[in-house]
Length: 115
Length: 114
Image (tube, rainbow over all chains, first blue to last red; front, side):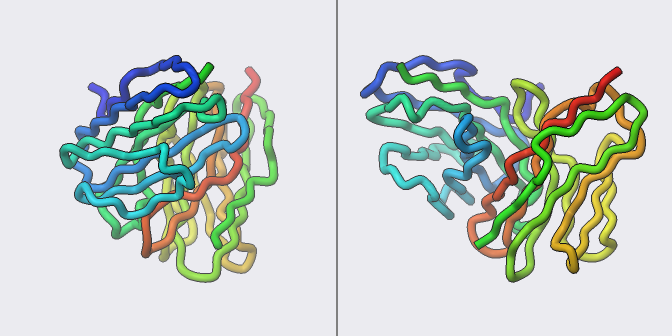
């Protein structure tokens, strides 16, 4: 069974619309993350959460808003979508901070295309 | 500021060959180093990590990496590659304090020819 679920797998949106990317992890981890991968920037950190609290935000735009309704959920809401937002978005999780988050487990990704 | 450099964008070898994928980092303090593998169209999978102790760390599927403080390097090696090892390999660093974000290198595409 998959340990980290991301929904949907593929997503097509029009410019200016709003979408929510879903992430659930069943590894019992207390830290969760979002990363973005595109042709322009191979792997880019976006957010980190621990026990449902925001730890770090490296996303310049407020159009990206993580939402954590449960400890094992970290969704990503993206508003006013732009073509430059087209990328694969990966959710990840890790057990604790003792290893500096170096051992993270990634979901399969949501591939977002903005037309 | 932490940076990670993977000098080889592409490496091609034959099945059964040994391979070394290079990673150099820049950071002034203590860091964690790790390697990840990404098969085409998939998410990343953790291979191994290092923080302190024995500079040679063993990972899954016969991979190992060696830390060198003097060279600021953390190269990944495998003695005998299999076609299924074809993938993109990412080196990453993270700091003991802070947000635990992984900072990735640009990746090395490893192609194993039959």
